Amino acid sequence: MSRLSSGPNWRGLWALLRRGLLRYLRSLPEMAGGTASMGLLFLLVFSVALPEGTAFQPGVDALQFLVPGLIAWGMFSSAFENVGFPLLFDRMEGMIQDVMMAPLSPLERLAGYVLPGICCGLITGAIMLALFSVFIDIPLDAPWRSAGFALVGCVLFALIGSLTGLWAEKWDQFALVENFLVLPLGLLSGTFFTLDSLPDGGQLAILGNPVFHIIDGFRSGFTGTLESTGFLSPLLALLPSLFLLYFTWRLFARGYRVTT
Amino acid sequence: MLGRFNLMGLWTLYLKEVRRFLNVLTQTVVAPVVMSLLFLAVFTLALGRGSMSVAGIPYPEFLAPGLIIMQMLQNSFANTSSSLVIAKVQGNIVDVLMPPLSPGELTLGYVGGGMTRGLLVGFAAGLAVWPFVRYGIHDPLAIIYYAINASMMLSLLGILGGVWADKFDHIAAVTNFVIMPLSFLSGTFYSVERLPENWVFVAHLNPFFYLIDGFRYGIIGHSDSPIWMGALIVAGVNVILWTLTYRMLATGYKLKP
Image (cartoon, rainbow over all chains, first blue to last red):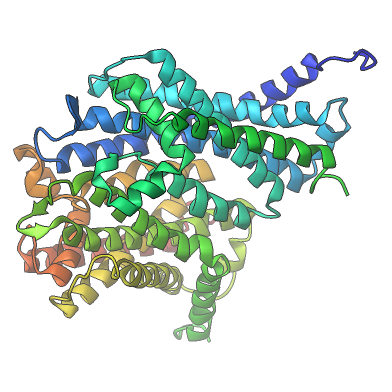
């Protein structure tokens, strides 16, 4: 295919997307199985430990509140892993050169790594949703709102993954970001608790956390109740992704840590 | 040298095992500690609504010992199992099998490494949790007894799993579907009295329950089952596991052609 014509290299993009998805599908039982069983464990623990009839939001059963949080956590960590892991692997094994040599623009290269990760996150989320709905009656107030916020969250975490995969020089550093940034962000962003269970200072801090607004929006698609209704919320949910997209795109364009 | 106890060989194997995890300290010690803090935050925020208490004890105080020993269990298992599986996959297991080390010395060396990591993580997690939950010490002897038995049991299980597994997927499956559920559901987060009636009985068949229960007793002085019974059961399980591991290494199961 000639690259003389301007316009996106659809075929190249498709090849990269397919490669990423095949990589994921090959280890699907361990990857999704691990995430889903972890989610089920949390659910079991909550259902045993919570006193009968606990409601987090008015009219919303505790488990109905927690399930969207668990799904969000599983989705986002899957999106992060499935971009960061392959990217770092390709760099360490030298395979990244195959992608650098291909007639792809920097933005297409970035998309070639980030898109499969977003898909992996969404697939993981769908698997978890299907699994949980067997055990719990999950309300569905506005499915499209949930889907939209799921996409926004997966994009954000996929981009964080690409940045980590690009920056890290070895697995140790990758694990550092995963353990000390991604895991706390996934667990502490209102995933399992409401705003009013936090002290005042904590409420203010969490309102500045974009992931909180993403999870809040995602959950409201199920339960119909938003924790934070400020007009800034959607903006806070979207802005970091846009910023990271621009930033990693520029890094790819400069060949940061991939070309010598 | 042969026929006598190979102290130097044992010490060398032990040092190798300890240095292996100290080399990636952030992943093997710091990350588990952060994990226990995260769990503390998540579960007290999600469950601590309306100042929930378990058996008259404030929930955070009930939770803290469970979180500490959960990390000890998981990390003792991770240390021996990952060491063996990596050595098997990479082929350098021969470097451990060739030297004049008896099956007993091999078991001791690996278990020593796993226990060191488990106890270190437990100690560090105990320190890290303390500023947030001011727990006391009810019975230091019980704490030490159960900490040692817990890390020993899981190190032995890690050897069994590591020898059995042929690739990383196998050991990941054991971790995800056996060790994690057992360490999650055996009373870390709740008193087993909360379980439906039939499950209370099942819980009492699970050695992990006695480890967590006994360790918690040492810290807060409350236990779901008689403490002497737990002590006996835990010791018995460890004797069985030692014998099993010894036989496994002595026969060369999946290790020697």
